[in-house]
Amino acid sequence: MKPEYTAEFRFYAELNDFLPPMQCKRTVRYRFSGHPGIKDPIEAFGVPHTEVELLIVNGESVGFDYQLQVGDRVAVYPVFKSLDTTPLLRLREKIVHKPRFVLDVNLGKLAKLMRMLGFDCLYRNDFHDKEVVNIAVTEHRIVLTRDRRLLFAKNISYGYWVRAVDVESQIVEVLRRFDLRCSIQPFARCLVCNGEPVPVAKADILDRLEPKTRLYYEVFYQCADCRRIYWEGSHMENMRRRLAGFLFAVTET
Image 1 (cartoon, rainbow, N blue to C red):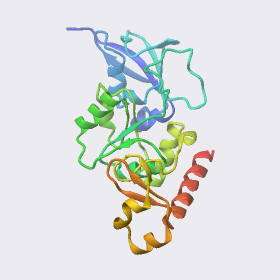
Image 2: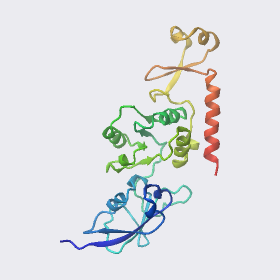
Image 3: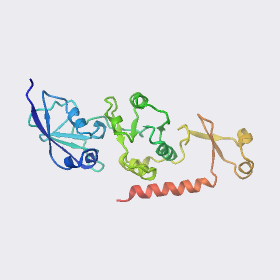
Image 4: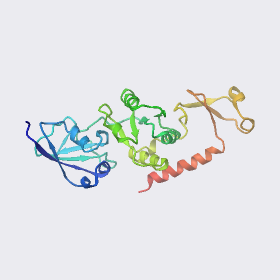
């Protein structure tokens, strides 16, 4: 029979969202045998590896390949928004280009809003979890989900559990979490299919326009994928006001 050892873990900031109240914001003992990879006990506590940005063991920065030792003191940190952790060991490569996302079936309204802001977001209301994981891996996309269990998939490198329930709070949460304010390009994506709208001549789509639209508008765009038509109707002013509200909320302290 293998001997049983203990190590100490402490989770910081929003990682406590995943813990039961009795384990929040305090040092917790973890019992183990052998030398498990450090990712295993972290997820045993209920914290997905995708939410972890920095691991400090006995005062030293380590990666997910570290094997837990008896008596280890482990500090687990989420993503830092204002602290440069470059000198420390990275758990995953930093996203250097504009991030792309894949959303699970629970986040259809969020997908539409993110597309309105110009972000590349794949979503279908019949996605299975395996499909989401496969897309995330093969296309290097960030998983957004309301199901924290999805983020325990070993192959997912980038993912985030969306805490908020209502979509207005969700979009602000995601913009803050990934520091996306400067990457917003309003109306650069089709709200329905995620394609890119391109200019189209009015004469080429005249037969698809309602009489009043045909009479009052001259500039049109068409999604390159699903062929949906867009124009700057009265609804655009409402969308711009909504966008301004998101930006104001993101910048609030």
